[in-house]
Length: 254
Ligand code: PEP
Image (tube, rainbow, N blue to C red; front, top):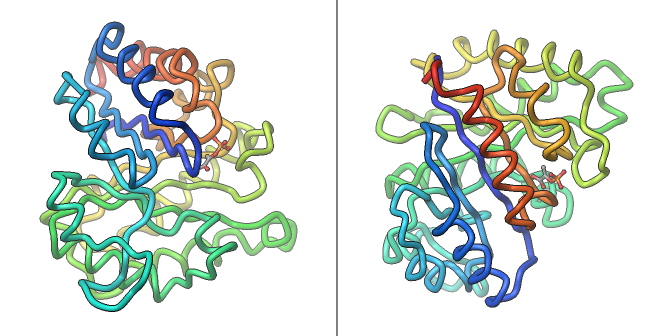
């Protein structure tokens, strides 16, 4: 059984006050039960959040990382800078980065390499657009995303997580249906051995309009090892509810 994760992607949301309220809630209400919780706020809030978290089991992560080590790259944040803050998780290749900031699979490969070199655990996002799904290109697209992104990388010294996020389900309020999630996760699981060495322990998360009402059915699907959550992770009540429902299911199996 693979490790379970509940990951919050706050994108460009939350004020510092919101972060404090969220952390207070976690500090007082969170009961751990084997599921790894990772929160990815904006870069500028990482330090403050790190300081206010009493609970060292909760991990913080970045939402992206520079593919460069250092130098004249205005606006970028390097892996070494994350090391300075003791942040050892980062999302890489989110569809918004791919679509809005033109990140390619090759860029993502460089980002993965740089994060691994600094022992930062990557959460690699993959997913097809609606057109690609309608044209029956889903598997081909996902395979290519993994193949190019993971080319020539040895993941044995980090925790490597893949998040399957159908682009058409992100932020729409309409999660993919259970059959689609089940079928696609099974396909991803089955192609991993040919693309990545020792892929057995790679957890595969689902992302795309997960909420407290649909999470229980989704986490019960084979090959779903947790969630990457956008909108519903901004509300501490909803995020805790999802996390707690995962615990109820995950306890015996972890
Ligand atoms: C995301 O942006 O990674 C995401 C899954 O967003 P949402 O949960 O809002 O669909």
